[in-house]
Length: 355
Ligand code: GLU
Image (tube, rainbow, N blue to C red; front, side, top):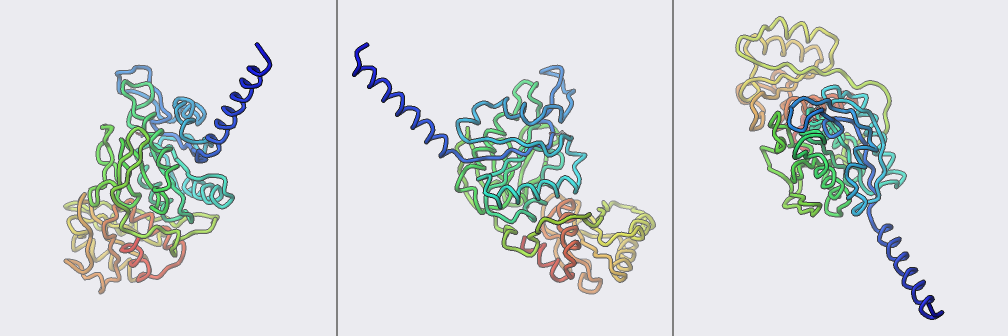
């Protein structure tokens, strides 16, 4: 090979290397925080329903989707490796602290959390109330383990990373990406026990779609994201207050409600029938609890529609709060945080309507 050809070859190689490095540097830096769930699960048969969630570590979850490298610079961390029915506030606090730290130190442009689908919406809502930055935080999971036919985890993870790296995803609060849809943390809920299209926001619909990594938003969340809010938490230690949920039904024993109210709690969510209604006997128990300082939030067991103030129940008279359109499990999380901050009842009610 003559000398000038060799020089040209080196030059082309140099240009290619520079281009590759520059392209890599332009990719967003995404931290994947793994918590377990079916997306980290595995079963012996591709067609049988039996499997075990939360068996694969974060490296294996990431390496199962090598295409991620084309859209982001990825860093994985294991927060815990559990089925999400075992999720608890201690892990929420760990996640919130780590995400706030990653953003404060400018170590990530976005965060993806892999999570079991059973309580994914609760973690999303907790983080929505506690992350103090406007960079994207996206939760995803899967309904089928990677070992199943037509497993959904790989595409969900790919799409979640694409959303976490998208400029348009900023300042929209915590998001959930499942089955090609993008949802806001407030409204999303698991609506099907086994179908890959398990998630929905029945009140507002999805915020947008993500198709093979192509992100498109149709709308933005109608509520405030709390990085501007009162419930913006610094890194806090300690335990969140215990807040039980009682599920209402015909013939409920008021004594059972009374026993729970006497169990050293600071707040309670009553998932009533209809527009958050308790029976007359339970109303008397809740009124007594409220009078001795327990914060009572009326939510509903009905899937759609808000719980409204002063309809069949005189909330002003009893000092009750209504959950608006938050499900009982999300109403509970807001109450835990509000009690932790020692907010008064009118302030807490405002949060239910505004966040
Ligand atoms: N129950 C398990 C969990 O929530 C599996 C459900 C899932 O991830 O789809 O982690």
